Image (cartoon, rainbow, N blue to C red; front, top):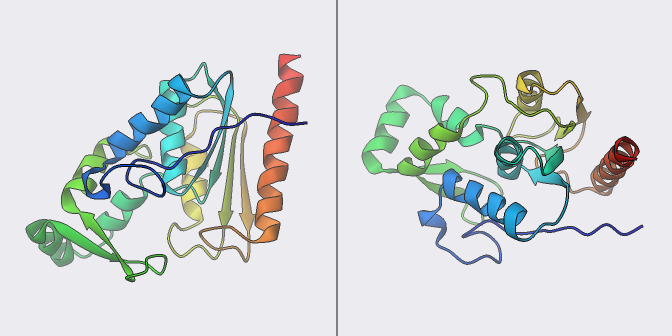
Length: 204
């Protein structure tokens, strides 16, 4: 059976227009809500990877009547803010003075991501782990235990904070941050199918 779906890149990322240096978590949150409001039709199961996993929770909070389930892949709730706060005080002061954080990453062609200090400060307004997360729909969190970008225990923290009682965390021992191996994709497809079946049963 075919189910319609919407897939998109955030502003300034991938095939989308926009200047990445002018983007913020708040702007990307608006991107997601715009897709839900103006493009997607009917109840939505949101699938978000890394930062997308953070944004999907904001979408579920803002549109509880339309978002019926969440699937996170290496969910990075509060991710960049947490990573920044873990830096030594001297390093954080240097970043504040420069206005830029050159964050090492093996996923960047340059080996680093240039993140503006203002981006981190704006992102602080969207952190969720400091209090219960008011999401009541089913939540599935998939995470690789070899993830060296967002530690897998972040998904455990998120699961603990989410108000919903229908929350599963699924860990893959040898998967990394991208979770793009065949077995990872099969797990994702199974998880989506399982939620569709579950929600169809509830509706019927």
